[in-house]
Image (cartoon, rainbow, N blue to C red; front, top):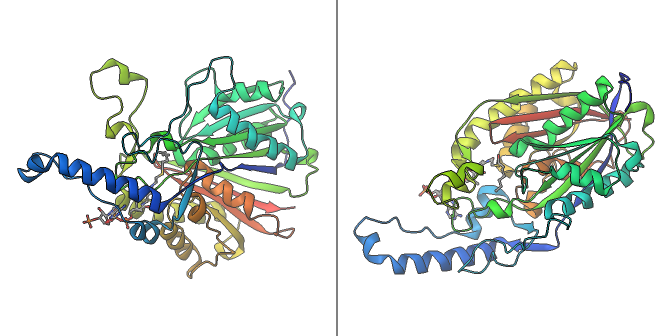
Length: 379
Ligand code: CO8
């Protein structure tokens, strides 16, 4: 235990990215969905004809790439997803004595972030595992990771869908600033594939699995190669029912299908697009203004990766012109939407070339609605 020592500076000093080996292409997903739809429609031809059952809609790989910018995604376990009789990953249950799936991928990213930050477990006081879903309620995945890394301190899990990473960094910033932790490990083990409805053409292509991690620490302890002063963090939420996932611990208490379509990820994608883009652009410009900065001062935008057209539109609203790929890198062609990890993947892969004094913005936006941002400057 330590007495809090308020600190003036908070920095990001390391990032880690763990990418699953398994790749799922748009074509593979479309093939299995269309096989399912054709079979369903043949089996229910009479009811569909009579208007009693809705026909299953076929998907199209060309539509997916044009509408979203996604070409492929990585998944933790591919087995089972392309089996038309299953269409969900086959992730074996592990014994309580084994490391859990989510802790395993969290650890892989965390170790990379610690190495990049030039830190070991003994330098860390807190672990936050923050993502769209945790595989269980307790014990917290963060405490399992804390144990595996030999960290003496505390850990907790938090869920904020697509803004889980930035909101957790916001918490870490406050903890370091107030002196309750010297350094915080924030991890985003995004296992989205178990919640994807691979039979729904509107959403079967959207998500991929990944794990990212970031080390935040006091500025005076940082000795890594790439260090970013956190100028400020901002978080904003506004309730919306347009993106939902209803599976939860109450599912056992009624007789509705616990695995029905409304229990999986579902959204009104077009409405989300229209409502979230202006909110995100306003949020970012207000945040920059708090630091006496404008969009023209920003060297790089690490935006949430849900849809390439959203990112192009938000950047256009901010800059008054199109952003180049160098200014606002896109990773969702390779990774798809990885819930909260998207902006952190972009940050991990596209930061080393920045020069001292360059300003960047990390921003997430999504379900809740939730928007989180950090304005950072390279040392
Ligand atoms: N193939 C062919 N046609 C299709 C397909 C398909 N796969 N999908 C839809 N269509 C059809 C539609 O049915 C529609 O047909 P019609 O005109 O006859 O009604 C037509 O194509 C056009 O559909 P849309 O208007 O919906 O198409 P859009 O251009 O809007 O693209 C997108 C759809 C890509 C979904 C787009 O709206 C989008 O990306 N919106 C933003 C979504 C977003 O940012 N959501 C945030 C989600 S992430 C989050 O916050 C929670 C994370 C939690 C993790 C979840 C893990 C599982």
